[in-house]
Image: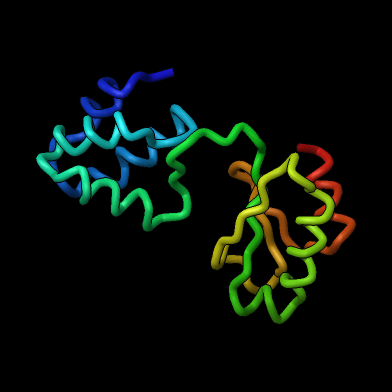
Length: 138
């Protein structure tokens, strides 16, 4: 696993590198800690508040580690029209506290919704049974 210095040195010390750095930190450590925020801010010549604001704005970034696996359910209009609201309720019920159920808005497969993402894999045409199987596999 890369350490924070390796991640920072892989990116230019420019403000437009903030999101790529945050994504790399999230991927490497599972969260963006307060210490990482301070170091990133210093590296990019930004205030801690600016970096912290970006971390809190985007749902992909976490301040504390969450070891649970995640399923990301699309809740965009097209998937809603195909039953994603009921699917989300079923996913929460099946997941209990063991799997984190997250909401995303549009996975780009609107014609074959409802959709979900587990890791880097996108799953289409979901129903309650398919979601339960995905969660069970986690």
